[in-house]
Image (tube, rainbow, N blue to C red; front, side, top):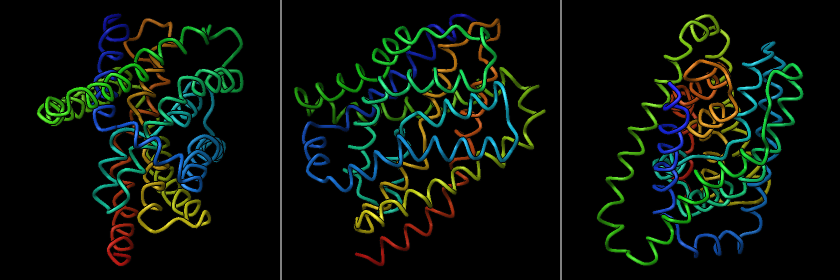
Length: 290
C-alpha cells in the first residue's frame, strides 16, 4: 500500500505533467505575457475565484473535517491536461489554454503548499496533520515543474521525436488518470458511498458554476469568444490527479489513499458530465463567432 502513495501516484502524475510539457514551448509563455487581459483573467479565476467558490460550496453543503479539506485541496490545484482537450473540442483558443495550464502549474509549486496549510488550519483538528510545507513544495516541484520543463526541453531539442511519442504519452497519461481516480474511490469506498448524496451534487454543481464564472470573468476582461472558452475550461476543469496526489503526500494514516482524496476523485468523474452543457453552449458560441 505504501508503494501506491510513494511511487505510483507521483510517477503517474509526473507522466501526466510530462504530456503537458510536450505540448508547450517558450513561445506559449511569451504569448500569454503579451496578453495581459487573458493572463489576469486566468490568474484571477484560478488562484482567487476557485477557492472562494469551493469554500462557498463547502459551507452550503455543510461539509467539515476531511471532506471539506479535500474540496479545498482540489480548489488550489491548477487546470489539467483535460482542460486543454476540452478547450479544443469546444473551439476555444488552445494556445491560451495550454499556456495558462503550464504557467499556473509552475506557480502551484508555491501556491499549493501555502494554501494547503491555511485550509488545514481551518478545517482539520490541531495536531491531526503534521504538514511539512517545505517537503510538499519540493515534492510539487519534482512531480509537476520538473516533468513540464523536461517535456518543453524535449520539444525544443527533438521536435521530430516528440511528435512521434506525444500521442503515446498522452494516451498513457489518460489511462493513468482513470486508474488513479478509480483507485481513490475504491480505497475509501465505504466513506464514498456514505457521502455520495452530498459529494456528487457538490462536485457536479461546482463544475457548472466555475465554467460559467470563468466565462463571465473572461467576458468582463473583454476577451474574444474563443479566449472566453479557454479561460472557462481552465476555471472549471481542475487537475484532480494532482489533488489526489497531494492528499496522499500529506496523509499519514494506514489507508492506501485517504478520505481527503475523495472530493478530487469524485470531481475527476463528474467534471465531464458537468462540462457537457457548458461545453455545448461554448461550442455554439465559438462557431457563431467564426
